[in-house]
Length: 157
Image 1 (cartoon, rainbow, N blue to C red):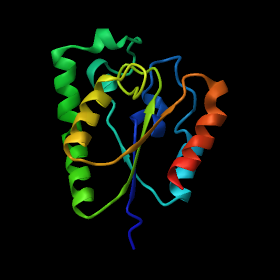
Image 2: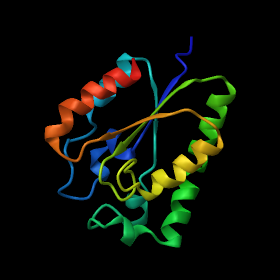
Image 3: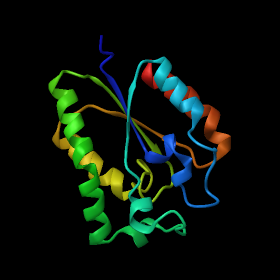
Image 4: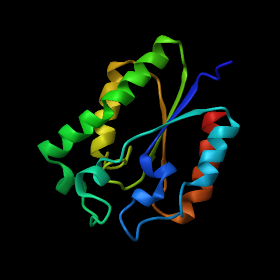
């Protein structure tokens, strides 16, 4: 029996080890987020981390403008190809519930305020596929965390 619910999550939702040194907020994954998704029978697709692939584990933090090069965009598009194929297949099999979890203030994975480069490319493809997707961001400020969790729970139930 398939639940037919998919969560597409920024890489560091499941792996904080990939984050720029000093910006990590968990030792591994954001456990509570993962537990909520699993309790609600969501399959999880982890997006790649182009920042880690592009500049490595010891990289310094950069702005969106610093990452916004032809080479970096090309890398993001290449890394998204299998993700887009997954989404095409799920859509073909009549999956209706999709959620996207990004990272607020990320030059790569911000969804709303200053959309990150990977999210720009992903959301273009999702629009082309005509997939209805709900989106939310893990907050930059810890004081916004409780509201984020409350909103996430409402969004996926």
